[in-house]
Length: 385
Image (cartoon, rainbow, N blue to C red):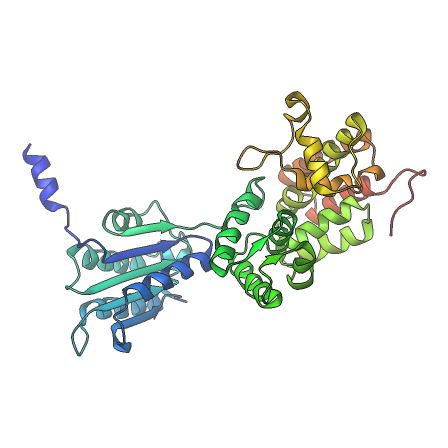
């Protein structure tokens, strides 16, 4: 009983609504929400009521300076009185890095935590944003106990649900602008912008201006306005595979590898999903005589009318429905392949994945060999250029 009482007594009492943390590898999203919170907390018509401290440290000494400035900001009341908000923006010394693991850094971070746990002066608010934070360390655990914390990690493009997650975000931002998309336009927009939320919002702004008084974006609108980002390139690699365009596929892979992209990520995000979609589409077209060249809605309806046992293996959306659009795209070109070829191609992808993980072979060579095996057709199927 006494021990419990002592523990409760030692727990700091921090006023609700004074401390806020926005973390996550989706730096743009975390910064956006932190900025929104700062604007919400900032005293109106008082330029001295907001203090922003850049948190990007280059060295341990720089970290000391940043935390020192933050402590000074928290402990210095506004000259003319009133409320005040201090924003430590984009801090990089909470991560599991050489800088973040430094004993000196940890000691100064502990100083900051002690001040926050003791409670700030009335009217003072603190907002912290950081792209990466080591959730195992004392700071994150204790700060989460006393602050309102949200984590916004970048969506994992190697997972099949990434498009659903991005579509939900884009639809939310679009509604705020009074915009909407056709189903295919939204899917294409997400395939072009990928998981980069900053790029997505930027392209959405351009699309908004392009549409003018029109409020519904079509597939043609998206193609006319939206620039291809990293995930757009991923889409283009898959499209090159679909069209058996070896030259373009190798060019796009080379570009991404030169930029430092991971070969395994390219395999998992661009090549395997496309080969799988081609196999599924070819199988559906052959066995169920689906019209692959017609209207998307008709294709989708035809797939959804199939018995459950015939579609149980197909990729699903977040709501449980069949993800028909990638199948529809694959169906446009699947006649360039046979089911037997695509089955072997999936096995080749598996072998390539194992070679990338377990061997010392040059990743570029592994992917180039895989592309040659998949895309060089038999003598009866001339290579498309």
